[in-house]
Length: 453
Ligand code: HEM
Image (cartoon, protein in one colour):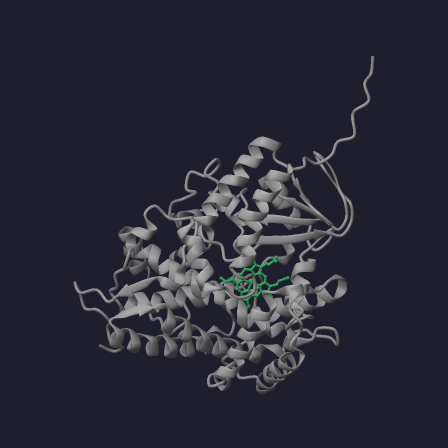
């Protein structure tokens, strides 16, 4: 007797489990601010150890329903959450088609200030804008071709921060983030943008609006003023910033170079949080701090340097606390999976912390282990995806790792710091609020060195 196989369908979460995913994974991700962070919410989430709970929930769903993709019961919406590492690799590799990064949510949010940005572009527009981004950002190079021109500006900003640390007796978030804003204007648009604080303020307002995506009306006049401001900096094409590389990059009438710039400005924020957390990791792990110091000993940090250990430290900070926890895709066509078909227009959620902190699969899940990034065999087959992966991987990855590892190096070279409330990192929490980290100048040693001293 032959039996006909029953038509297979992807597993579907029950109502209670769907509500749990909405409450523990989706809402906190939205509440903390997708386009700009809301510091008060991040503090609350640390106290609730929110990301650890979300990971535990998704691990339980994987045991209950199998490895998915798991459909959620959300009215009026097709949505799945990925629970299997092979599915994550597939979706990221098969981007932008059939899995587009330009999801409805991202188009609604980024439409507030960069509707032509590559991340929310599709088809040949995406191809064209991606090529432009990769060229200006010098995507494949560990050290950007324009780094010689950038490093002096970065150094000047770090020196002025160090002066503040000396006066305050501590390194805290507010001056760090002010330094970061100035540094970013310099690196992206050149020295001529240094004084343009209004540019950063306007972008902050537009991002706060974008956090509300569909729910907030567009601020069209502000957007126009902001984009005009960028255009005037781009025209100047200062050689010390990315703007200086734009004229030589391949562009066509569909590229819209000016609208690629806001993402370069705001994406740097993630590295401010990650580098501040990286400092906290180093100052609670003396052996790793010693390795970092050994890496920079004797180097001339006024010249661009590739610093593999500090780079790996940044990557570990981003693994432990990914700054893009929800990597979203949307299926354009119907696709087939081991468990059954997935219809077109399905939103696909990869919750990065599930894979970065999956203690059912990774022995280093909750440890600070830079070796993971230095030994390519350690994570070869596993989705550690702070910068996403595949054809839509962050094209600024190398640039931002280089800039932030250089800043860490300059800070370490000049300071001996401690960390207040170091117990917040023991054990390493699921969520770490960077905005309340405080590093007093160490009383045991020289404190903050002056340059040339
Ligand atoms: C630590 C800092 C950063 C992190 C963790 C990061 C992470 C990411 C991630 C996860 C994506 C994919 C988003 C998605 O698929 O929805 C992305 C895309 C992108 N990032 Fe970054 N990024 C960082 C900094 C930067 C910087 C500094 C730049 C530019 C100067 C940049 C430029 C871009 C662009 C243009 C895209 C869109 C790529 C595309 O759609 O093809 N990023 N980034």
